[in-house]
Structures are given as C-alpha cells and as structure tokens.
Length: 142
Image 1: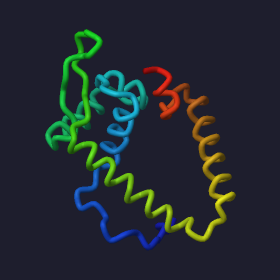
Image 2: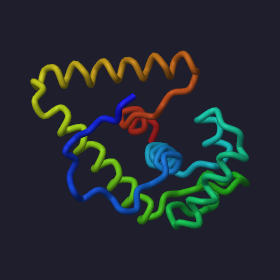
Image 3: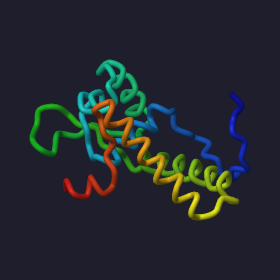
Image 4: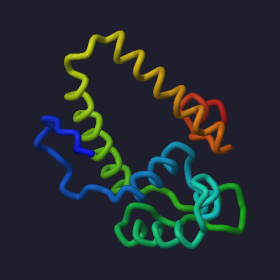
C-alpha cells in the first residue's frame, strides 16, 4: 500500500512520539491519571506490555507517577508538561497534514466524513466492549 503523500508543514516535530506513547498519552489526557492496570484494560493489552511502554515514557519525562488522587494503593501515571507539549505537537502536525488532504473538499463532505468516522469508531468500540472517552463524556463524569 502506498504511503499517503501530502504537503505537510515543514514544522514536523523532530521529537515525534512513538505510536504507543501517542496512544497512551491521548488516553491519559482524555481520562486523567490512570494506573498501568487501567491502561492495560482500556487497550486489552497485557500489563507487562503497558509497563514497558510506560517505563519508556517515564524515562523520557512524558509522564510521572503520582499517588492515586482517590486514595487507592496503586500509583497512577499523569502526563507532564513535556508530555502534553509533545502530544499536542504531534496531533497538530497530523491535523495539518489531514487539512492538506481535505483542502479541496466541500465543507459538507468533510462534515459527512467526520460523522461517519465517529460512527465507525463507535461501532468498533461497541463490538470490542471498550469505548474511547470523548470530550463530552469526560465532561459529564467530572
């Protein structure tokens, strides 16, 4: 399969996140501090896999361990300012690239695509029994 070529902005982050770090950081950003067990459950991964991935993120200063704010015994992982900076830089770069691909699409078709992708993702999540927290869901929980 050929790679999608776009005229992405020159400011591609030099310190791009690994895919696993991007995914884990995105989940922690959406839900707040999480334990390794919670992350493993969210992604249906073995805790040892998540432990290795988060250990690398700790070494890079992307997350930090904190006591459970709810008083539990397990330590939770919280995104650091550096982790947020890098997550947002990667996300902004990807969005700009997608903007370049869709630049000549009519606004109504972009809206249709967004609605259909949301529906597709929700269907996948329902089938897997694992949902991804969306901003409106997170706001209702807090």
